[in-house]
Image (cartoon, rainbow, N blue to C red; front, side, top):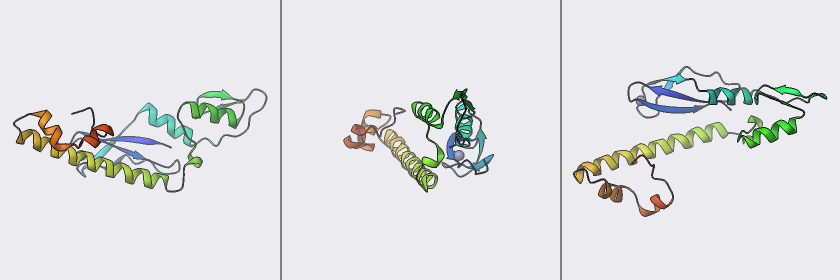
Length: 154
Ligand SMILES: [Zn+2]
């Protein structure tokens, strides 16, 4: 399943967007941070996933066949699946229905929550005259820290 990064020149942040194999890949989407236009960035990773998602995995003869998605010669769909699995790839038909919708929705919620926390943190840094430890303590609960929800960017 293809995932693309989009860059927003207004707020200088990236938005990830997941597409189904049959979807048209948009050159432009709206930035999930500020709502401005974000342009597609090509990445080899996204490209490989797109090819993989488009591969149906048909059977091969004695010499196998070239799996274009994986970029290797395989002898069976089973072998292709094993290789894909070892690379952390999942065939698109294996995703649950509404996977794309759920995934996108979840990501947007996560990003919104992160943005909000960053805002709170920055406000707290100001409030404590640049004391980042105090700001951290005020912004995040101990549980957040233990759950590894706090990004290492702070
Ligand atoms: Zn933006």
